Amino acid sequence: MKLLIIKNFLSFNKDHNNRKSKLSLYLNNFSVFITILSIIFIVLIISVNDGFKLVVNNSLINFNAKYKITNDYNQKLTDNDFDIISSDLKDKALISKLSSRKLIVKNRNFSEPVNIIAFSDYNSLVSKIEDSLVSGTMSNDKIIIGQILSERLNVDVGSQLIVIDVDSSSVKEVDMITVGGVFNTNIPDYDRYLVYGNRALFRKFIDNDYDYFLTNYSIENNKTIKSQYNVNSIYDLNRNLFNWLRSYDTPIKMLIIFILIICIFNILQNNFLYISSQRKNLYLLKTMGLSNLYIYLMILLRSFFSLSISCLFGFTISYFILIIESNMNFIKLPKYVYFTNILPVSIDYNLIFYIFPLMSILLFIISIFFYFNFINRYEF
Image (cartoon, rainbow, N blue to C red; front, top):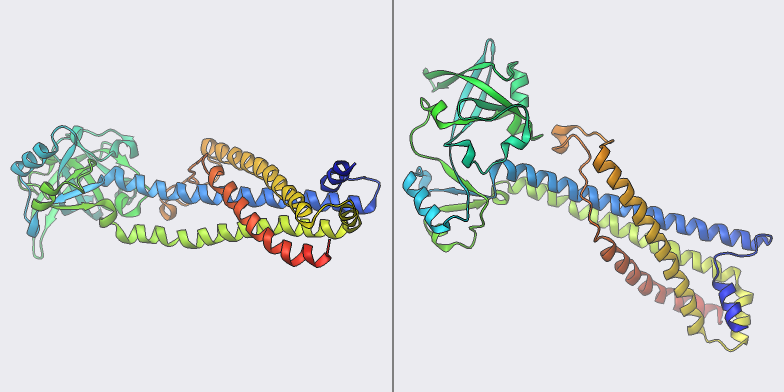
């Protein structure tokens, strides 16, 4: 008999013909709906934020690799330096030998300043430029340019560009090179100013030595190389950009915490209203010999059951939305503002193992406050 009363007290489903029961059922359903909605928003916010950072990281690493090796005092690197570094890393690392030079490219009446990146052989490039090509192909006998630059110069694959080297007073060198491909990184400075090509195409503008090497092999702990050369990670070279990305983490994390707390208070507020409407049943349970703590634990169990049901539906719906968006790309973004023209999504199925325990802990902690401030007040 005692268990039947407790079951009836904790049940989400009451007598539909009773007005109070209808109100209680409405409040229960509304509370679960708000909790489900909160969890959906939390998962979507985290997934989009992580996706955005992943897009930026991948874009920078694809074009710059993880580590840049230069010589001291702005001296050039030579093939001898390449042999030293390669021998120290053995066959574990792919290293690109690159030179850069600021030039001017011209097509008819259009001209633009650019930064040419000259490589020894595109097969040894660490940068994954080919993944960003929107037209044409990459080869050793043609250059590839960014999409913004191609639009400004009104050129396409197969067009020829005049490359000019000027100083403060005169034109030093001029050459004509064919465009073999157009790439798009969604990073404005890359798509407007970078031009990639084999060293042989720029022999009039660069010498036989190299400005820097690029590699993806971890060399941060390599004391031999770091003692002889300057080693900078892509994160060090783009510190302002990554600091800007990290600056968005704090308000986003605060927003998530606020949503979590509101979600928990929503469940507890529903319990408080439920306790108020079931005061007679509570007195009946007390008369049957149940302690305040036992009744409180039953109410807390009801809270965890509500949270579990909400998490089940919330995570299912949010992952369903994320999977559809990642495959269909319904939401479009201004690509040169967000570094991508689609909504970036990073689906982490482990989120449930972080969010549910955190919400459970918060629910338990705040429930203690509710217990001492509300349940004891009714002297059940």
